[in-house]
Amino acid sequence: METLLLSRIQFAANISFHILFPTITIALAWILVYFRVRYARGGGEHFMDAYRFWVKLFALTFAMGVVSGITMSFQFGTNWPGFMETVGNVAGPLLAYEVLTAFFLEAVFLGIMLFGAARVPGWLHMTATVLVATGTSLSAFWIISLNSWMHTPAGFEMRDGVAHVTSWVEVIFNPSLPYRLVHMLIASGLTASFLVAGISAFRQLMGERSAQVAATLRTGMFLAAILIPVQIFVGDQHGLNTLEYQPQKVAAMEANWETHEGVPLVLFALPDEELRENRLEIGIPNVASLILTHHLDGEVPGLNDFVSDDGDVLHPPVAPVFFAFRIMVGTGIAMLGISWLASALLLRGRDHALPRWFLWALVPMSFSGWLATLAGWYTTEIGRQPWLVQGVLKTEQAVTGVGAGMVASTLIAYLLLYAALLSAYVYVLFRIAWKAAKSDGIDAEQDVPTSGSAAAEVAAS
Image (cartoon, rainbow, N blue to C red; front, side):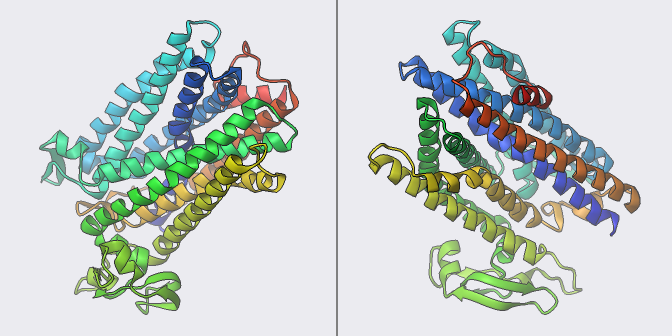
């Protein structure tokens, strides 16, 4: 394979691994705030027990996110030097703002949050928890701002092939930022809520019947049941924004080859880019037009509009975008059904508990948010191709001159390392949950692990 494709795969592997952890910590931090507030307002000791348990998993996940993020920054220089050379005046300050605001805020108050529950006044510990949660959200804001700018660049001008900022307000608050930011924050909420519910279900299956685990299970399912309808609305608005600024991405999502009205919603197809048509297509008439334009006879752009007269293809590869989008939607529908059914069972059941068969169904759904998030990111990032910065910098123009063999060797090393780390992370999560289920509770004085190795030691002890 050529250097360009290998570099794209390597960066995709890096960002796919990294995004798993912030997707949890952004919302989990606010769930911890909820537990802390409920305890402070007399909700019961079990809310503080829930806080002590989940702050351990937050610390482990936060550490994994920080470490995995370092390798991504290196890749801007090793694999994509053309990116910083061309748009470094925009990307550099935005990344610096993330460090100066969000990361410093987290670093200052994280220690109090992790170790201060029994050592500092309650108001200070709660304040530290709120500020760490604020820091995780601020971090998401700056990163999503940069990513959104790469899709809908604004507030700059090109001089001698280099982007120069003309308005930081337009750069930061570019046209797609509101939709991408809210979409990502809710995705984090869904990811964290299903993780909380899934781990709680596992603890109940292991025999734990504490008020703590019952409360966290309810919290996860009720939160998911509320967030998913909101996410559907936000996703619809995000789609309209994408149709306006990146119509070629929408055409690939729908595998729509010709621009016309009354476009069907394709449930399944095998897009064929050589023949410029779909094979084995199954669709519902007019529904894609209804979703994308809110009119049954609305016009939807076709992929063939994005092929130049000389044959240059200016739309993304169709099959990956088409299938990734459907995986995201399908996973979301499954999450909707499970969270609503769980909420109904919890509210109407005689003992406000879930049946054992449902608990077993929840455990594999612990990481359903990861699947939906990754599928969504693949849809939006592959859907931007062949551009790295939409209309400004093509991906092939930014790639390194390093040989394909060198990139391939580091790619293999990354994949092996990430597979090992991810397996260890999942094992430690369930090991900690198993130990909690078999013990009498969470020790208020027990130190919280602040790294993967420390958490592993706690799990093994």
